[in-house]
Amino acid sequence: MAKAAGEVATADPDARVVTIPNAISVARLAGVPVFLWLVLGPRSQAGDWWAVGLLIAAGLSDWLDGKIARALNQQSRLGQVLDPAADRLYIVATVAALAIRAIIPWWLVGLLAAREVLLGAVLLVLRRHGYGPLQVRFVGKAATLALLYAFPLLFLGAHPASYAEAARVAGWAFAIWGTALYWCAALLYVEQARRLIRADHAGGSGGLVPQGPAATAVPDATAGSPARADGIAGGSGGAPPGDNREAGQR
Image (cartoon, rainbow, N blue to C red):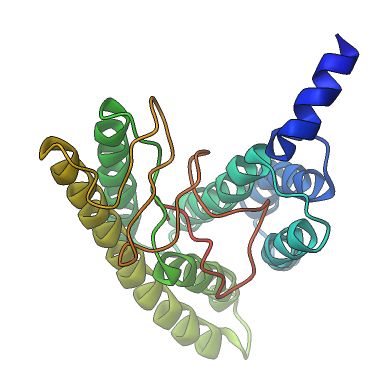
């Protein structure tokens, strides 16, 4: 049995579970409840600074696990799920914490949530047609990074300090641009899915070939790089800023 498992792992390197990038992604996920406690527990300037430090560390680790995965050839399907899941959870946790503390309005929370609901519905349609999630372009990663810049600045802008005004202005600039790019990435994803399903209904692949249930779609040259079969993006446990390994749902 052990030998058979080893042979499968050798034949399919993407099936690996224990890798350095995966360990980094798990550590980043473990930081989400810590972040929430720092923001919603003490509700102090010191707690906010620790929370901002944790967000910065999470962002750096997102870049680091992608670099390590490519350098050591440790890409895996598990990493492809963990990495974007961690990004998404940090965004959800941060937006919720900011709204609870009245630092951002609830309508912004609704705007970001509506985008996720839209993409969730599109993903369900894709799965009904036998496709997995699609990969969009650089714009989705740029949106995520802009929001991850915005949230720490908005936290700091809520403090009674000399830097508060500058932090608040910069934070809202990143928040507005990040939200706009977030929706732009969503619309690109919807259009890519629409073309895929239309080609499927037409009885031809149109450059996008189904591969069975939950298969990874293979876009044509205008649709971005090939999607991952995991749920979000590209080919490793993480990606650096500007990498085109952006997931279909970011």
